[in-house]
Image (cartoon, rainbow, N blue to C red; front, side):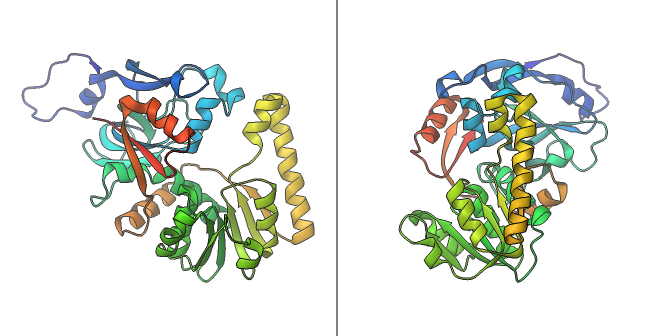
Length: 362
């Protein structure tokens, strides 16, 4: 880390927030200079730390999790959007301590432990000693949760929150089907729904059955050994499909009540933009979404939506509350020091580690 030297007021034993901010001018970060495999990632020692805007917070990073979006972006997903902006810093989740705050930040203070997540389109991510997030992208970290545990939660949980609370608007007593309940987003959705008083059924792999049931799901169906259309009974108010694809879409739609919500994490926007270019790809993706919405509304009477993560202060506060109460956890299967980021990405690419992987910062 590079610092600017400055004199401290001898009459003030506590450095001002402004002084703390000006100390950090550059730091270590994992940089993506081009798209490709894990070998393209570079740990650089002196990456510039940008000046804070009024609503921004500088976070001293202690842990970040590796999301599927990170490995996909590294490989070129979203190329049409991100290629002109290279080099990038990957990473969305973060847990650490507040190092400095912008002029308008009121809810957080220097030294406070926090966790949160950046928007999917952020160019400067969290694989860095000092991450920059807006105030509404952070919340205090519960003392009962470690930095490693906290870093695995927010991006996945906010993705699930938007689908269930903002789109489907789930309420107590409703029935929810989660396709892919063993993954981070699906598992967060199961826990949110149970906490909201919903009746939850989830599909998952055999290794996740016990965990999904322990989280409160009333039924967990092994997609690899059971006929889902036979094993799953009744109709649902909402279906969250974390897997995507024609078959899971067909299955999810078939299980919905009229007036229900089908939500998929795998919209066409980025893939169409990459394939056809921004000028044609974005309008085409919008047209495909509109067509599906109309098609399923008239054929099945259901709402069809693409869903993705976005900053939500209310959602993040609920995530903090549930995490503190032990009602929202995302298990971490393995940690790596940030200096081994290539090995961590390689392990995820080869599916050597099925669950969450976290990078730790010293």
